Length: 30
Image (cartoon, rainbow, N blue to C red; front, side):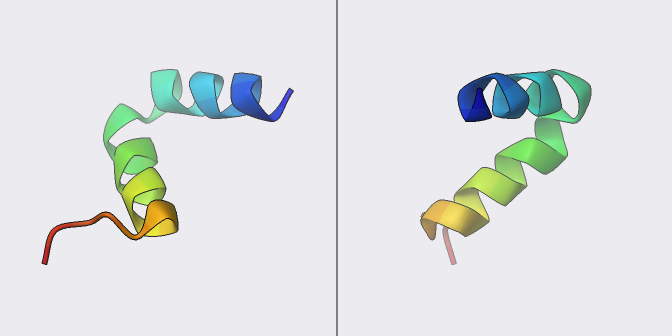
């Protein structure tokens, strides 16, 4: 599932995945 892929990606690249999710949601502090 899409959620499973994101979970796996976070486990592999927690920092990068976190930044990507913030960028996608547009919640990245500026």
